[in-house]
Length: 509
Image 1 (cartoon, rainbow, N blue to C red):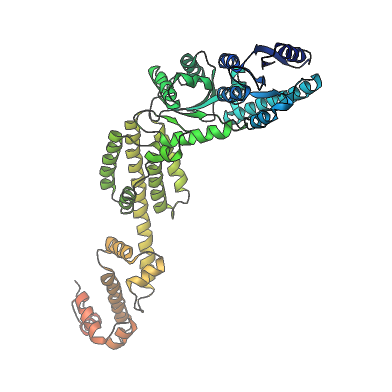
Image 2: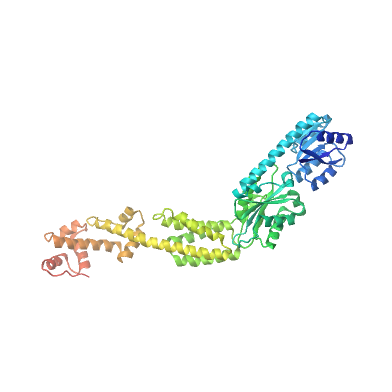
């Protein structure tokens, strides 16, 4: 059943419309009548009305002013204008105020029925749309609760999103019935209804828009609600704004508020945000991860400097605890670490990023910021240990490949750049690998292999001359070969041949 209010200063016309409505056999009842706009407005402030039938010309407050004020109270109100032929200019202006339709005096039963039937059809569609959108917002197990109480079906509404404050302990009070009771106490006598959402730590609340009249601003209402919940042991952040007059916007508005609220949530204390404020003002404090901070931590990871990284991380986390930090900045920072660690281990494990993300996700479920900080330090330490182990393992594998490649090219003249190009790494990395596993430079290591090969040739092919050995092993000239050979073995090539052929061991460093 829908409630209608008739506003008409002529008593005969008022009685006629009232009688006609009663004879239509439609789910509409005349809840009240008024002789002018002021009386009607007072009633609208106190009682939920879905259909308003009003004259244009009335004393004290005319129909156009009444419609404008009534729409502020209830943007969803369906208004049918009653006018005479001479009032057509007023009727045209009224259509700009989103009047549903208009009837000419004297009102006829057939015309009234046709208009009211269309009003009822739209009201029913509107309610069905709201229920469907609430089901989309709610989780699969909560869709049975997606029903609006009567005042909220037809009054203007404030849309509030309530999110549990990050790094606070979960309590039994974080339940729909508890939030409903606390907010209903605050907004009484205005209607308020709380709905679960797909997010386990987030609720949607719809509040009769006239509740805002008690407060100087929507922000004051939101902050009052946040403090009311904090006083009851429910740490939360709240974002909200008035629902637009266009139908079918509830789900869109919910997701917009939820996104903006997440951007503004900080550690340390909850926030209240009027998301209807200009975006530039809302996002003025939205801190992005400073480039210097990003580069500093990624370079420490790339350099495998575990202890320096840990000291800097402890310092940064303490600074964030002292100053407060946006939750999205923490998420970006952890995402940066995940990206960097996974990038360095991707060659060995393509699924490393998924594993790192899964391991990092529980960090944001900590009961306190300090718990988060300790968890992040421990998590990053484990990442470093895996990275260092992988680095040692991959270094051994690379050295084996480099050593095999170099031994296959002892009769050529390789440079460190040639080796780096072959294995798609930097020359400096090749240099570090060679140094780690041979304790010598690349030139020393490569030259040593050539000298050993020269010794092998002299033992197996004693007829080879020194110049032939020098040319075969790609030395620049015979004299340089002899000089290098003596540095590595302690004797000249000729002396070495004489000793080996004479059965005496060659002298070596």
